[in-house]
Length: 270
Image 1 (cartoon, one colour):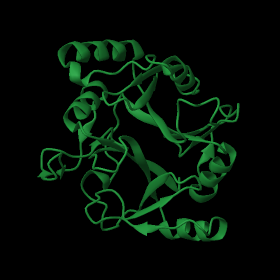
Image 2 (cartoon, one colour):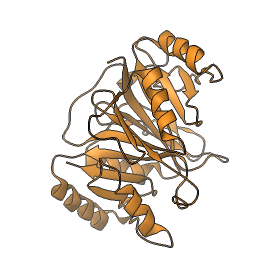
Image 3 (cartoon, one colour):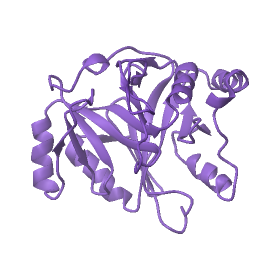
């Protein structure tokens, strides 16, 4: 297809425990070398992780940045086509140059709700290391990203017009829209102030398809016992926890809900 979803970025102050979680439970591997650490120094032992297709950047959170899901990214066949489509259909949306140290993408833009995404094309100067080619297949892999919007139909139309994402047959409904690049899905689910008071609009969660759901649960328990700091967190706690968990489990791609050690929402299916 014209577009592949290739990147997710999370802001964290706990790279080590987050990386241990994703590497241990999902078998993700490091594909880049070196990232800024909590001291603001270049740490060669850190890097982006990958499931073979999607790179997961666990970025050091700096003052003024929110923790959690920050942005995601697309690799496209022709960036100029994206520019042309934005100019035709969404002329107020800008595309800007990425910072030179970013290993995935040369450009950054955003959808009409302000959700930021990276843009990459093969041969761009910034595209390097493990992002140059697709990597490998593995039994546990990221199969979707979810956005919440007060106008889900409009946002779904944006990603179809600009990136040629296709609706997943039989999935959309209840004011939710499920799109795909042919492998990885983009779910766009509703948000409003009353019903979703415990949530915020924007990037909501991402999910993994696993080979064996019950074994994955056992692996989560084993990690919690061996390294409590890297354990998954329960969602259904506190005043809004049960509502938040129930709503996450309303995603049609969810069979098991959980949160990573930082509280980033995830779901699993098999």
